[in-house]
Image (cartoon, rainbow, N blue to C red; front, side, top):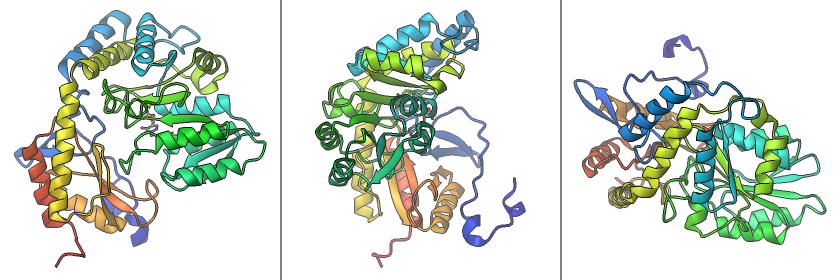
Length: 387
Ligand SMILES: *Cc1c(COP(=O)(O)O)cnc(C)c1O
């Protein structure tokens, strides 16, 4: 669809979505006017999506297993490759067992469908991912939301539930804000209210913790504190799919009762092989994370010096606050004209009036790449409090 073929009022036109067709492999470089363009738009934080050893594992896996899994996990699709990856993920995250899912969306639907029913109250951070809201609808549970990152608000809601069983969910690192969920405080609040606590660590897994085990590991929260850990494989791990880690009993219950789990095709086994290779890279190549942390520090320090309106974030997700969807889109397009790709994030992905650029850093970037981005931002971003 072409921009001019869409006839909408101005404000709505700023919200129309377009799919860009990319002709290059996943990574930070894009062709641009004969030179090299730079992208800050992917969740491939460790540069693993097109890393040759992982591509090689996928090809080897495909040659042995075939391309598709051939069925759901409960039919014929479950293989030794899936088993090995599940065992590795459980060991890595320090949980008793782990269960693979075809996507994070399906994992979240399954967990809530199995563990929550009409009697439950699901208490969620306002900024939790869309899949978690849809999961509540599938479960039939009641929904309450607390102010973003606010443990006291979560506690207040949990305490007001009466006899209803509670289920508290937060992201580990928030996908559009890049900040941490206050996991230790939430774990305490859940324990005090006898609510189950789940963390969706899609954007923390692979990055935080001594071996990249994610936000829970960063906060030293084990299975007792966070009985349900969900994370995706399509972000820092660079492949595709998701897993839930927890007690053997939890995992068995998800297998036995999970409708979204049961009625979907298993991940291709070759993808499980590739993910196993990616997991080995995360564990054995901590220098990727170190490089990323160095870039995050550098970017934040320079942005502060330039007076850019960055939201506070310790993670590779660095949101630059612009407010209006129009302005966010204009800045994003002007950057693109210089060969710099940074997506504008607009409602409904973020609340109205909170449009932003979502700058996503990768360990594959260099300081020179960041300098080029910073120069562009400095030239193009409106900064009302500077003359
Ligand atoms: C990406 C994401 C998901 C969905 O994972 P997919 O594997 O892409 O379906 C779920 N939760 C959060 C927080 C995410 O960022």
